[in-house]
Length: 373
View 1: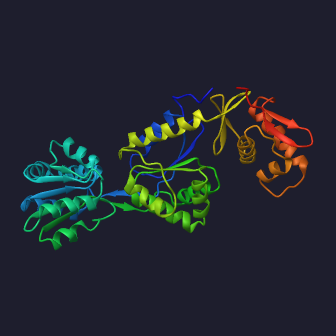
View 2: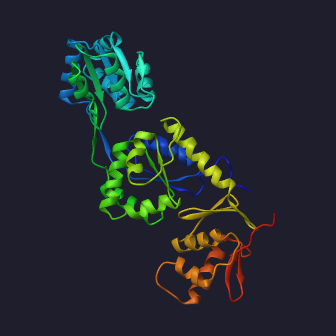
View 3: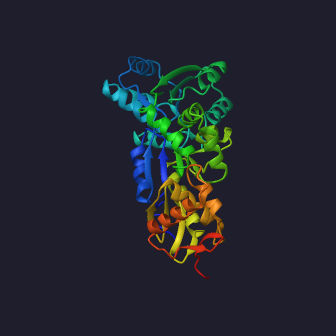
């Protein structure tokens, strides 16, 4: 029997590193069975009350742009909201309606459409490089180009367009700030390296880079990379730009076909559903080993760290005999007393609730009792 298709993430400890929309993402994953942990790598600091943003908005209204570049959905919406807060939204809307609007990806296009405007072109790769290539190819000499920037900065767009003869109007709507809870962030990278997390989810490139920087400072990065390489840890990035800092460190993340939170969740569901189809079929039911638990016959069974590691060794043997010495190596500490292995197995049998699941092979060790096909 495989894991219930409605809860393929059952027992998975999933770390969400995002600040923005983390509750929405976490709720979607929890509905599929995930056990959520949160440790935002960065905070998003809105500029709604920033006098500079208001002044720049007034400048855009006074000197209407020929081209407007919307780089992020949240940033574009926040710009309109900030203008509305000071009574400038109607004038700004009229100015934007007369301009060519270029969106850096589908999310930015969606935000433009939500305020009753239309985009003239969309960078499907969601990269600033594609935006620059398109507009420079069209020619911007003598044009006024307004750019709504995201938290990571201009990505070189301002200078590229100025060098090509454009008059650039730059608007920073939000910026990245420090993590809300640095201690929780540091603990999250240590827990990931220690094998307590099944999957880490990233929704922005700056957030991914910041999380990796903390992992490096905590001496946890080698352990995290090692777990990603042996596939005991799944890294997930919402898109290829977000994935790049991970790839640069040797981590190959799961990336959905589309840069949407919904697509990210569906990609994770498909991944773990595939693992469910490969689950070990035992006499007690389908068995999968997670970071802090096992899933047996669709039930999540929490285990101690030692219990998980012993079960992982037994499962990896796929019914083969695991010597006591190997069981001892899987347990925390340095004990070489064979009695410690016997005690660990006895506790594991009790926790699993089916003493027939783990067999003792006299003078050799232990094995999982598999279901005959």
